[in-house]
Amino acid sequence: MLPTVILYKTIPADLHAHLEQHCDLTVVNSLRDVLHPDMESLLARVEGLIGVNEMVGPELLDRAPKLRVVSTISVGYDIFDVADLSRRGIMLMHTPDVLTETTADMIFMLILCAARRATEMIELVRKGQWTKDIGSEHFGTDVYGKKLGILGMGRIGRSVAKRAHAGFNMEILYHSRSVNEQVEKDFMAQRHSFDHVLAESDFVCVTLPLSDQTKKLIGSRELALMKSDAFLINGGRGAIIDEAALIEALQKNVIRGAGLDVYEQEPLALDSPLLSLPNVVTLPHIGSATHETRHAMARVAVENLLAALADRSPVRCVNPEVI
Image (cartoon, rainbow, N blue to C red):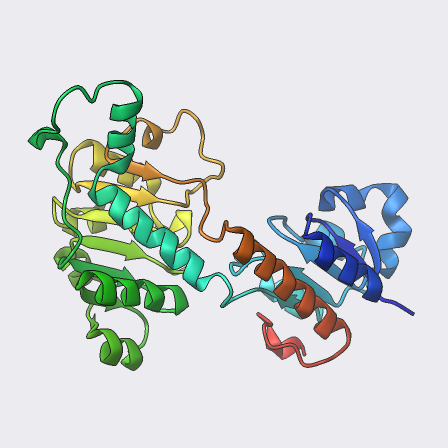
């Protein structure tokens, strides 16, 4: 008998077909749909959930006694109450590794765009204001040979360091909970205190996950430690930076600029001052948004789900103590 699975995210057709071959699959637009009374019998027998960007909370879990696996099509899992899932004996699977290089590409794009004032220059051309040679009032900042500070030296941090070292001859400073001997050997990276990385770097790059320890890690005090001509780049999680403090720092030129792919609230509100500040590059959370990477993430999430349901020792489990 095939396990009952609820899919709450559109996935590529080949992966959808693969799931249908191995599961009794029900597709919904949102997990809110399964809370309808008509879905009671489905919840009573469901064993697996697969999707992204939706809370799987007690209201659903209390009505799904046979649920064994939640497979999220993402690396981040801060939206989940992992402790509650573990208490209920439910495995939480995620998709690390496959988006590392794509996200590192995007982060370096933010570094380059912020440094060379790409957003401003694009608007200058589009508005017909490019009527003479560009003068010093529109000059940007060199990236090559500068100091790059990386907060968090995991997979993505290492890939950013690789690009900075090999492509741009940058000096790499980093702060993380533990020493990363490999990046120190490969890229001559130097581990320093949190404050030292902020104070000495020309570009400060956030690649940390969100946790109780990293929430609003960077606020007014931390921004004031940075060089006045430095840039803050966030490719981690929006809530790691106190957005109000960042806006104030940018308005007062405490730092030169910022490149952001993530925000405290997403989508970013249309009245956010971040959208009107000329020294900010704003992207709509596109770190993993390529055809190849999104397909790979969905494929890994499907593999995770099927392996867990078949008791095949899944390797990408957030709470392996449940296995």
